[in-house]
Length: 222
Image 1 (tube, one colour):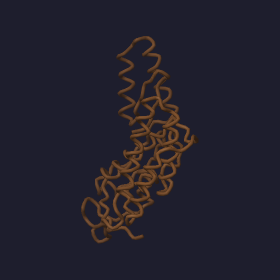
Image 2 (tube, helix red, strand yellow):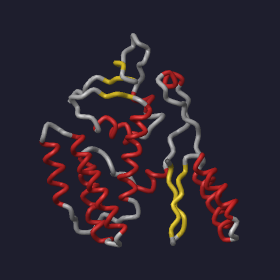
Image 3 (cartoon, helix red, strand yellow):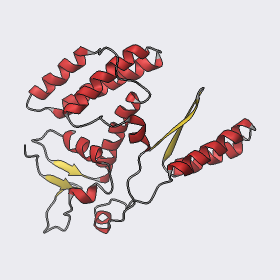
Image 4 (cartoon, one colour):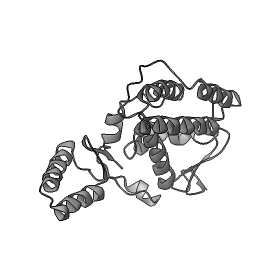
């Protein structure tokens, strides 16, 4: 299938306008699944408006699906056949991927509700469906924890800065993040809330989101 024209900040992409770049360059800024999600989020007949904000929105939406799948074992008996039916109806309607994504979003919401209610078996069953339907679009096949902790290789693409896209800087390594989290845990144990808050703020500035629970602290990249 051919997609609609690709636009950059609402202008048609073309060499004559000097706003031309390749998918290979984009993949230095965003993970492959993010680019795939961005393309599929619009109907194939519609134009694509390429902006950093739209790519970031695609990343946030994709992360939301992986957050729903995180810490689940999608091996139980499947559930949620109504979601599968609605998904296939959307895809049979002239490849209506935006509507299909709306179904996946509703499914992810239902998974989160089941997790919050302690309905692990139902959440696992729904996760089976989410992975299977995502797989039709080439999405949601990675390990959730690996996806949420990945960092794109450092790059500096001057041409992208022309389009309002900042160059990528290297994020903290996993070892650095784990070290800071351990320091924060020790500060919390000593009730040094000022130091604990300082470390959390440092991690947030580095694009790391912490989630505290009774079992400890988990993290993911923003």
